[in-house]
Image (cartoon, rainbow, N blue to C red):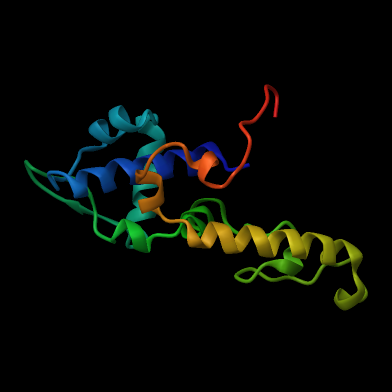
Length: 155
């Protein structure tokens, strides 16, 4: 599961991407919080992280605020997930950006746990790296496009 912080980051990016596609004005934190439903106190730190990563920029002054500076179709969801939550791999020995050998593993090549999770992770990473902020701007019925059933209560 993604964290609340990542969810708020994605919602903020959607708001800024929508604004870029529309009027293109910079938005104050209060406006982003209101439009995204994310708490302002969380957004302050999140927006700074997104700015440091070069995804958004800020303007000072009377018409100041935050704006999307990178094209939404060039911002992968994987990039945002890694930026906010760190490595995505289910095992440290599968991570591309933060690889670490597992302490209890004698041979990665024959590790069955690594093999099972590696197959799952390879599929997941291909999909999540192909999705972008622009995909979030599209129709909200994404599950239908992947042929996934609607989750049942409690899932």
